[in-house]
Length: 365
Image (cartoon, rainbow, N blue to C red; front, side):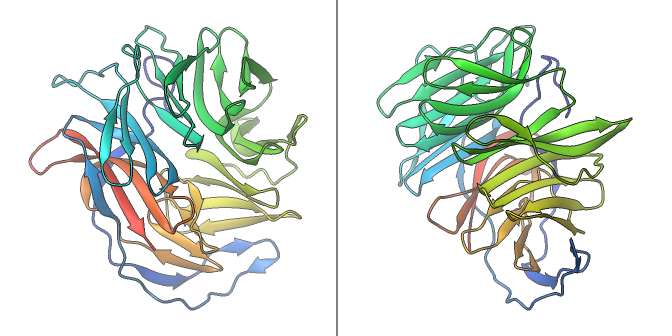
């Protein structure tokens, strides 16, 4: 994972020019390998749906992450910049209330950014970012539905991934020069620490479907090679997952825990996207010719899964989606709970300009 000058990972967005892809087409799963053999392609019907812009802020910057509680309650955070391209250390937050996107200010938060947002309910929204110091560390705030409160974080600690289950149950991975651990657990009044940094494991993703089904994905070293690895919290302790350990060479691995018997770990290299799927009994290996960055695997609400922003796996069939045509960068896909609608956070350059603007796209199946 690339590191910024602060020693912690930079913004979640990746930056490049995005050409407009062809309209949505469906193809068989040529090259999709599953333990036990090759899956035969299924038939599927094309759709004319596509990503479309629903919001753009009139400032320089980009959205890093979104958290959707319902169709009428969506939070998005990102980074903003001065005309000279310097980071503005004031959390950039937008909240959708069902009719419009509203700017949100956290009292006393000047001096930090907003890198991530995670929520379990309308009264439990967590926002975290980095402070403006030579070695930047994490600053965290929680919205309880009425007011913001600052959550204490151990000194010299950077939380890079967060999943919120309840006000007293928040998991994160990261690093700390104070406590020397990789996984952090907020229990309502303090943080607890797990997996010492000396363990041969580098966390890269976190997801949870229940208090006793929390997964952290990442990589371990096998000689000079990086191999996929993961740990699972069963409600009592962390256990290293017994799983295949393929070598990977690019980004990830990210994890999506849908349930105890439905877990996806995805990563990509220069030519293809890959995933391991746990069905409660065994791991299955999935490989596609499609390369996704970032490779977030998100349930689509109909039994299928998004692989990044341009492909859906339905059964054993792939759908290739049209993507927004713009120059800039984008982050992961977020599903709006209870719907088959999705959000994409991005930074979009206007025609003839090199300045990005924070932008939200939406897709409706």
